[in-house]
Length: 231
Image (cartoon, rainbow, N blue to C red; front, side, top):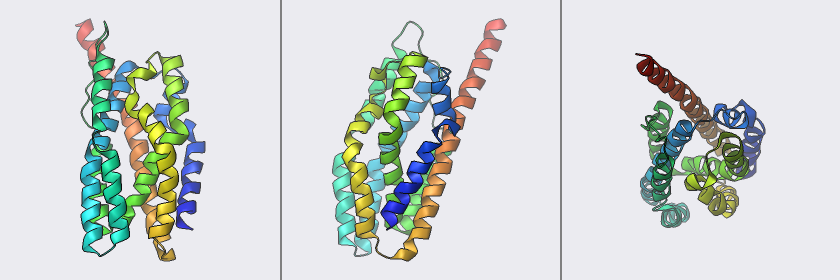
């Protein structure tokens, strides 16, 4: 079944968590508050565009006459609207210290490319948006608790400043299981396994690039600050 095949691949990715730069930095106590702020800002961006993507997917599914899939996207739209506010509050919290966060919070190149890729994918076939939903929800449930604990305990950023992730851990426990079941329910053609695996592979690649950019851009910012301070 396609849903179970994708679940297995996501779990295999999660098992290699220490290959991910952001997870490894948290584990080693090297994830700065600026890095966390950049991460939260980009997660907030993706959460913020999710309603538009769900509307797009709903419209495409309706146009194709796939009412079951369209109804699923309509329900997800009701569930996911307004969550970007959590990220906005987190960023205020991350900046409200005696050492305000100065790190640039613009959207990373990988996230911009992922956003465009998802729009193109939905237009091609709205069912191909399902692997992204499954990955985003399931990886949050699998790795979110451990990552938040590492960031708080080893890097000094309180979990209360990362509610956009923490809240989704709770919400997505049930949603993740639903996502895999929906894939099996809505996508019955076994020939779709290949395209859906390809979407999942691309999403994972964009996510890894994003995490690498979080570390590299923060390092570059620190170098600029050090240079200005020395001058």
